[in-house]
Image (cartoon, rainbow, N blue to C red; front, side, top):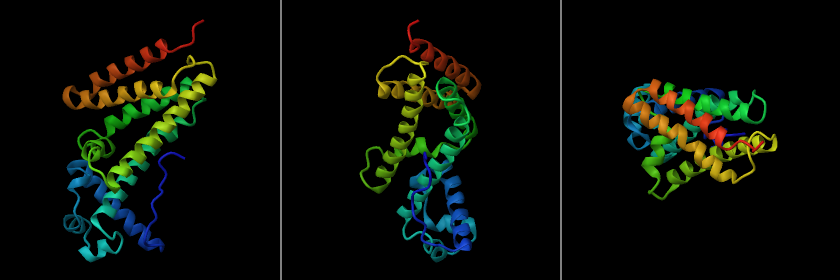
Length: 208
């Protein structure tokens, strides 16, 4: 399933797992404001009321912490955007639900930031484990969009075509909504996004 946790946790006990979740949650909040690259063990330890060694007991390095935050961001995104949409019928109802949920994600991450989007800008040209995790998150999400699009084609809701191209075009709409919401306000960005989705659907509907 999309964006499920795949990283192993070094602590197996329930108490240790709960502590780790607390640390990751606080680190995620910090990353929303300062970026994943802005994370460091010292300030995070102070924020959660632990020693540096206590934090290191759960994460062997700063990079391990950053990877955990990227995974947490992907998990939250999947739970907010994809999972509720799966209750909708296959085809365009599900595609529409994904896009509406994605727009709501933009609304709900306003005032801080979207860790996933920011991480692309931080690591797109920086080879290494963090770059690889960002690419992994992107590929997982695009594969889910592709699945929803293919189901829409199979249901006769969309014309047969290049699924990757469909995904590229769909993906561009929430990115623009995010950009416009930050500059000009969410309401106008959301209106433009809703219209763009419906125009995309109309332009790719099967010829009757």
